[in-house]
Length: 259
Image 1: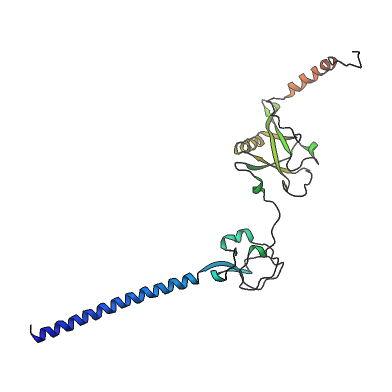
Image 2 (image 1 turned 120 degrees about the horizontal axis):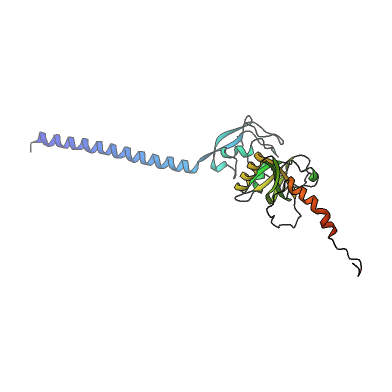
């Protein structure tokens, strides 16, 4: 091989080797850089948290104007700090202690609302439905949450008003705004009551309200007996009144050993 050609090949080989070295070096540098960045991100990972946008004092309420969302390194983020998804549950909550500007806010720094939510009282499958206490004036002052009631429907059919049993042994969740687990219950006085019923029973009550008037009958505390179907109308009342004297005459009175 001629010296000129050999020199050219050596020069070309050196160039290729140099280029490969640069490429491999760049890739190695990029890989190492990525590893360092991943390590730094792992050590300094952040999470958006709700922080005080200014110094807040005890008694202040959380509002959109005094808090903000900020990326906080997990290393410095207190456990259970409020995040964006928590805002709807804690908006307008009252602080029980001061919080410095920029500091994350935790539930322990807020006063808990001790009131009971209606949804917490419902068992799986139940629905809450409210109805006014029409026709229940005799229960004024005697109906409380946790009582159990029967419902009767009075409606008009072919010109005659009729009363039939609607639902029975229904638990009362609330009377007005007084819930089942509140410490003080206020007696009912021309207010709505809220009942725990199944979806079908809720639909039954809704339809009955459109048909006529619903009356409430209070059950005894230990009374869980079913109610037989019946229908009461004007004709039935007249028949009952006519039979009353005969029934009274048929009553046997025994005094001592004499009849």
